[in-house]
Length: 587
Image 1 (tube, rainbow, N blue to C red):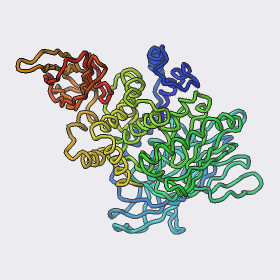
Image 2 (image 1 turned 45 degrees about the horizontal axis):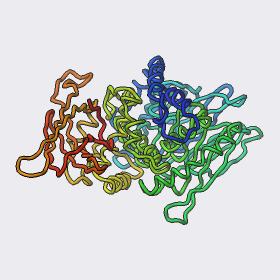
Image 3 (image 1 turned 90 degrees about the vertical axis):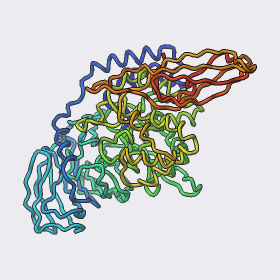
Image 4 (image 1 turned 60 degrees about the vertical axis):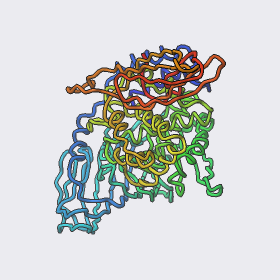
């Protein structure tokens, strides 16, 4: 998901300064002042309330998993005025261990009318966040089951990020669309709400006749329901996590273009659903999606859902959300400047690989979604405009300048709100990939990304899984890297000095480089005091008076360290990580 609720204001303030200007943002002389002012404003915004749903989600995530859902059939009717939900969901799955009861996640705004299996009513108990079903007989390991839950209710928008079934207006017309990440799917449909339990899904959505429904997968048919309603039937045949299931409905208009796959023959539709009043703007700004697809497919591997589509649909939220094969785009995005729209489009498209194709194992691992998608923005701008990735990271993605000092870790420690430290998850997560790119080298880094995708295609991956893939391509253990950058907060702060002196035995010169790490010993927010040493290879560039230069690599693994280079002539200046491959401060 791109730039959460609090980050929306940041984008608006920044991009008003560079609206529609197709040049790097750092070329604006007042950009840093603009960002600082945006941060001051952001600090005055309250976080959305998330205590109720988040505490429910914590219980869900902690309880043992005894079933594996293989398929959902969701039938839902959306009534916008007054807002109502009604439907039935059939859940097919199998037991992964002996089980006597099944727990289905459903928030208390959903009224459960009945639970059935093979036409037989099942007894159930209701708690605030789940349905506990009694079974006619205990399921043995591997035994299949089919359960149907009939329900109705009123949409709610609460929880982390203000998720749920959103109801709003554009002009005089209502729009209903969901935002489920991370824990809000059970506010609008009963399901087994854990990112690791992926299943296929059929969605039948009944809406007022004038409405159009955009959803996951392929649209199989549209049929009338009486004189005033229409049923849209969508089928998602690729495994999907519950938080990525999407239904959006209003009086959309749509337009399409085509993506030609890497084989040069296969074509796939790119479908855009927008408000009628936004059509002209969307037709001008959304087609960059195809360029982004053509950039990412060679880097990551072919678009994972090639047999279906990629779509984008407007919905009433400030940011955007990477629903599988149908990204939901905030309905104000289309009016922003070109660079901002491209940033959103590239970020959300990248999630189709990193989040949808390969889905996080737990919400601790959310950086595997967001850090990857954020760095994909850099890859897009690098290839679309020819911008230098290191310069781009340093100027626009340095967390200290753009998003404030990070208070937490890339690995999300707080499951109640895994997005709490977005600077670490998004921006530092992107820096992790940028640093790995330099450590592994260009060819091996992109080979690693493709390998990571293939290993966990249509499945789930943890941070530890990703580390093992990196180690296979690095050829050695990488605990030294992952422990300091993923599981600890902060960054190194370097103090660098150098001097040049003639050698006593030849005409050469000796360069003495002194590197000291001066970051605090105490980890912020933690009681322990550690000897905090960042271990990193760092490029040292020696510049000479004739304009030439050479680069040496040092292995910095101590608080204070000296390095010597013997050179045939004295350098006029020395660059410390001039390519911006390390997240750092230099004093």
